[in-house]
Image (cartoon, rainbow, N blue to C red):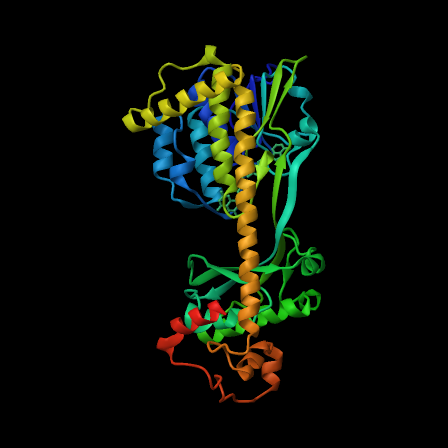
Length: 440
Ligand SMILES: Cc1cc2nc3c(=O)[nH]c(=O)nc-3n(C[C@H](O)[C@H](O)[C@H](O)COP(=O)(O)OP(=O)(O)OC[C@H]3O[C@@H](n4cnc5c(N)ncnc54)[C@H](O)[C@@H]3O)c2cc1C
């Protein structure tokens, strides 16, 4: 426990889940309602998730409650940040605002029966959603199946030159490949590949999870032939044309889905207990393509304002950031909210429910459109790889060579002289050629 709290007295507001959205929500409520008794319950002692988050700072942080502490933190936050870094900074701010955090895995909500508001910010497998909302979903769908390969290379990792090598390599691959080069540390660079696979391959690979990943060297026999061929070609091209020296046996493979889901409701009012339960962040809805956290924070802004209206008696009159623009943005947001409450018969949490429904609907449509676009790119890739008149391509002998694994290479001493097809053009013409290929 990081702060002493009175375990006898039920907190007025309980936040279940101290991930980025839970912490953000608690911080905003505490700024708006400094006197309110609020406690965060988080099951983990330490933050370990390290994935990179892309923040749309302009949209996501517009109209936050005016507070110098919060403003300084946001101003210094990069727009690409590791989850553990963001969580540590939010945790630090929570401490400064004296928000108690209890480290406990919440399995039921009986202990909070006297609380006025329970906020479920406990992620995609939310226990609050399960207990209070019966896990009822308005929408749930897998959009894409993905293989993630993480590995390390010696020195600075490089991308392939797109026109010269990547485009013609991609055409030879059964699956679309997206590559992210990490930051070099101690003379090693982490690289992440995402391969868009189909459902059939997913079914064969789904036991490769984050907790129990496959390793290329030890699980090769479990990887379907087409997938292994794609990986082999990609690695061989990177070795030959980006001078990539992979750290042996560092290739970790996991299977993931890009899914959308949306809880059927986000607010529940228990008449008997006079208690609200709300969902926020991944507990409420989730979409892929680097938008979920941004959406979660948008919802947390709305939720904290709505809760502020329910607890007006605890409201602070002194919250000013000392920064005119921040105050103005907040005043604008607040005025818009007051109007929203009026439309909702002065029931602020109904307004929150409505807001999340509207946002989730738009985000689900956006995610589906993006998935459809990816499908079109996949089809285009297949077409450009099979049409007979393509010019910007590897020769068939080269392709055969790229398909060979390390063992095959040791066995064969063949020296390939016919590197390119006879139709291949000079380097300066690649751009033109690519346009031609895309049109086909
Ligand atoms: C690889 C990857 C990359 C991503 N990149 C982006 C990106 O670039 N941009 C973006 O916007 N989003 C991104 N996301 C999504 C983003 O990580 C999530 O949307 C965000 O973490 C959700 O925050 P949250 O606080 O709602 O839930 P979580 O981060 O899941 O936090 C929930 C917290 O609740 C705690 N908890 C759960 N159950 C209990 C319980 N029973 N009792 C107590 N505590 C509990 C958990 O320990 C956890 O700390 C990415 C996700 C992944 C996996």
